[in-house]
Length: 101
Image 1: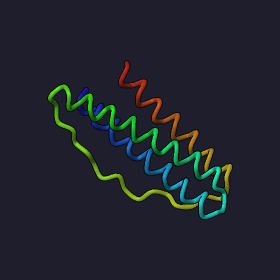
Image 2: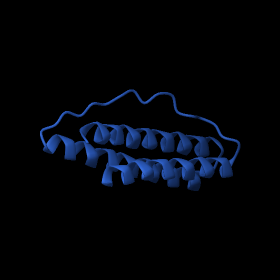
Image 3: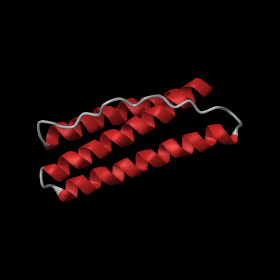
Image 4: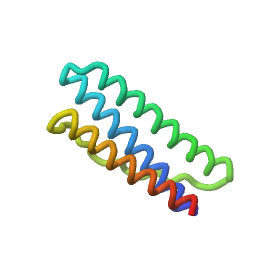
């Protein structure tokens, strides 16, 4: 379970950075509303990572953070960004469901 929780922390951090990259993409395209929405998603994913982090630490266990890797920085338009977001959210939700099971 500890390994799975550490994986979840890293998945949430990856999500946060991916959404921050999407926010930067939208800023670059002159779409501040879209950029703001993705920035809010970035903050939400960081809060998820921090909750899992605190849960592990509060139980006296060791958090093991891994390298996140390079984020994508460009997409072929707004629809592709949101398709990638949906696919990613489904994957991360699957990981959380796995923790519950």
